[in-house]
Image (cartoon, rainbow, N blue to C red; front, side, top):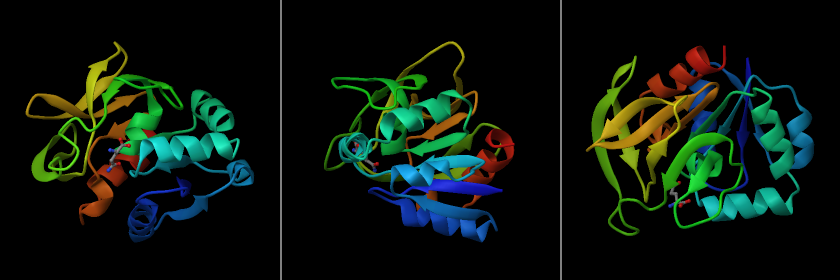
Length: 187
Ligand code: GLN
């Protein structure tokens, strides 16, 4: 199995580290030509969705990536990655616009919006969840499965082979959410 990690901006190194711990081969996606490499899945990390979205457009990668995901490439978006995948973004434009969710950016406030909880994630039990200026999902389409909620807000969801979390599983030592992606979404 080979998993590409979008490495334009944000917390991509931590995802690569987790994949290595799981014994999965991985490579960084930095430019359009990296998209032709064969991959079983793709991770879009947290960071700043507007910056990553702008880079995807400037590097002429947005349409190609959108096509690949629409054609079934399994994808896991964390935090800013969730926003990039969302069809709708409250008070703003969308980017890849492939998953039938509405993302509310900076939903917990801009400065004081960082916190840690341990909550249930459907099918895998309690997982540590680190939120950093995180979005949450304010609406989901009928085909979207809700996987986790914190204080009544949706923080993890799946639609076909698209998985998103508004928290950062790569920043804790638990490997469970990445395992879920590899076992339940990629295969
Ligand atoms: N606030 C960021 C955004 O709107 C997301 C933060 C993150 O990825 N940790 O893109």
